[in-house]
Length: 174
Figure (cartoon, rainbow, N blue to C red):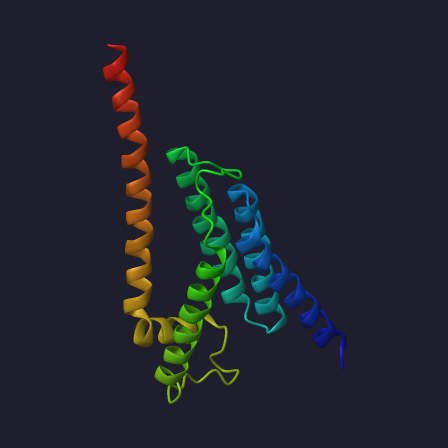
């Protein structure tokens, strides 16, 4: 086992632990900060795999844009950031069972769908801008565009929700 392998495992453990903290944290801002740690850990894993382009994309797009968009949406909508007993239901076990069933179904569908899919990442194209561009624009254009539209819709929705509250306050004051 080399030092690179040890670093890969340690960064993976940190990323996995912070990912668990993202979904178990009761404070949304803390969850977003744990998400930054998770995404940063993934960028570190990409660096260890000598995929520098992917590491920078991870940092710039996901850490720099998606998390900022998430925090921006939270602040605009004035959502409850901490624990709220009004929003907590008593169906934790049912929700856990549904979440596990959904995750199992998703993993099964993805494994079945991509069982025969093959993207050549043999060192010549893996992690380089050329290889990732070819893979992205040949195989992943539709999911990439759907995700960008989804993020745009989330941002517009947050702005609309926050502007509606401001309009109602002005009407009540005037």
